[in-house]
Amino acid sequence: MRLYNSFTQKVEELQPLEARKVRMYSCGPTVYRPQHVGNYRAYMMAEMLRRSLVYLGYEVEHIVNITDVGHLTEDDVADAQGEDKLAKEARLREMSPFEIARAEEDAFLRDLKTLRILDAHAYPRATEHVPEMVEMIKVLIEKGRAYEVDGSVYFDVGSFPAYGRLSGNTVDKLVAGASGRVEDREDKKSPHDFALWKHDPKHLMQWDSPWGKGFPGWHIECSAMSRKYLGDSFDIHTGGPDNKFPHHECEIAQSESFSGKRFVQIWSHCGLLTIDGAKMAKSKGRLATIPELLEMGYDGADVRFFLLKQHYRAPLPYSTESLDEAKTVRGRINNFVHHEMTERADGPDQPGVAAAIDDARIRFRAALADDVNTSEALAVVHTFMTAINKLAPARADAEDVVGFMHEIDGVLDILDAAPAADLDAEIDELIAKRQQARTDKDFATADRIRDELVARGIELLDTPQGVRWKRI
Ligand code: AMP
Ligand code: ZN
Image 1 (cartoon, helix red, strand yellow):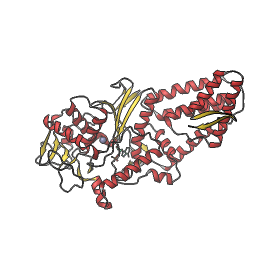
Image 2 (spheres, rainbow, N blue to C red; image 1 turned 45 degrees about the vertical axis):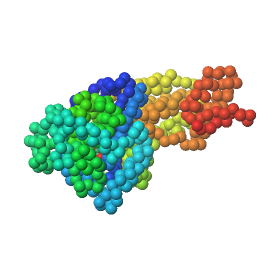
Image 3 (tube, rainbow, N blue to C red; image 1 turned 45 degrees about the horizontal axis):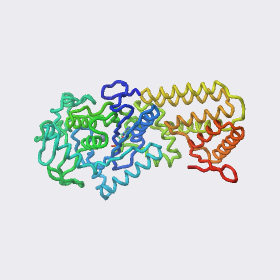
Image 4 (cartoon, rainbow, N blue to C red; image 1 turned 180 degrees about the vertical axis):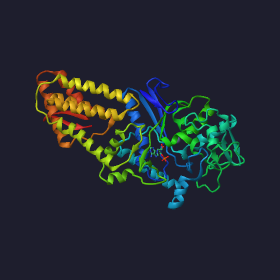
């Protein structure tokens, strides 16, 4: 797998710390309002990377966090100011921040299912990992990388010379471009130092700490949770483009100061999903949520296809025209698999079909291994379908074509389930073929058909009335 690393700004060969095993962390949702399709672009990118790695033979452990405290409204500077997004929403909706967080988390998990995004191996919540954050902050203070002021703790950016390497926002540049919005509290050593722990008696969520009651900063949450689940060093950290600075820059400073080790091998960021030429964002402008898109008649897999069509790093403008096109093209692929290739007459095998499958498989793998190039992978599928249609395969070849389409759909996950009646007829036909093979004493073929049925979740039962089957 060759992957673009935002840190080096180069495409690099992925070399996991443990052979063939990839540990991956993705910044998850801030659960104060419904997530929109722009947010899902970031999660889709991470899960396609994961699915591609699995297809290429890696084992992947994937963690996605839930931010339910500490993410403040003015988050484009490291030491964010403003109100906690959850606390603000709680005030506006007259609900508890925990109620909002759990409801939005449920909605997030539902949307993931709709988009067929694989479940992460864990979804740690920030509010349930405060002791791990406090532990890390204590060590940072002991190491002279952080200091307390009136119950708040700040990271000393001056103690970490590599600050700015990921985003280009080195302290020199930040000073030159200081917008005046960087809080220059007299008690901070530098205006660029950012809060690890905040003392604020008005905040709705408070935890005990060695520095008194308070709540954690957003950046320390991901340092502490990634460490707990994946260790001091892991392979891939993903996020949306706006996470690069300040969030990920600060995570690097905290985690590397804490452990003295390299934090992440490859930083991976998707491009923006835009609407009306600007970032789609919860805080402003027009949004499209997943339930809204379903209401408009799109299937979750249409939205998935729309997100896959563009390379993950390129900007992606949202439009209903693009969603319509995704729906049409996906319909064509489904039709190819469930009708064109299943309604075939008997006839001789053609060597061209097996060759087309082999060629498509090689090119599909190569596209995914080349920085998860899903737009190229879909182009391979399209070329393959055109080639197969020209060859007009007979039944046996067409079954192989369908088998290959299911193989690649293990990665893309864009096909609909076969229409039930067609599927049942197909299974009855395979069982009849197996019976014939047994009668002919061709046990190799009989076994192969049984294995194929098992792979499709079908169990055969020998009964006095003949062979019956059930789905397992
Ligand atoms: P949030 O819920 O605001 O913390 O965002 C969750 C994830 O969505 C983060 O990784 C963001 O970087 C990402 N994200 C937010 N808006 C967009 C967008 N318009 N395009 C791509 N990614 C986004
Ligand atoms: Zn994060």
